[in-house]
Length: 182
Image 1: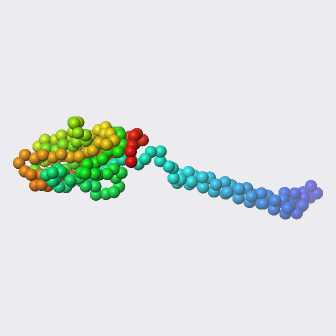
Image 2: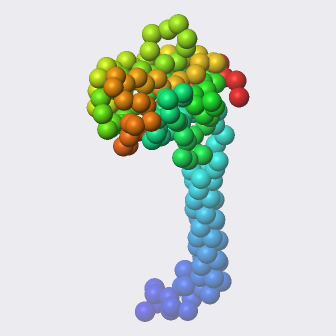
């Protein structure tokens, strides 16, 4: 057994070398863990950071019409304050130029003629004659200072005698970023 060295004298098994190797593995593991933590932090900040909007909020409103008065036609009320548009003098005020998606729905107690107007001297957005219900959608180009309002006429009854079920008018601006006055 002359050529074989005992285990105590083997160079790879010396206590100093084993300690140094374990220390290097520990340092490498700590650096790898910190790198992973840094990557996860970056990903979380990237996905959950608040990105400022390039455009103002989309102009929209949802109004109801439930009763009719002889002088004013259907009374428009806005039940929620989520909309960014306002009702003023029984009309929806347009503050931004652009295309608007317009939806008009409702069921009436008797036949009537209904027009949805937006500017004096212009053709109405909707013009329906002698209907008992309406469920219409259109897209129209509206401008600043336009006022969207309903006009109703009946043949043999007063406006106050008409009852409305589910009367709803929705306007949604389709191309934000154009000319707006707030």
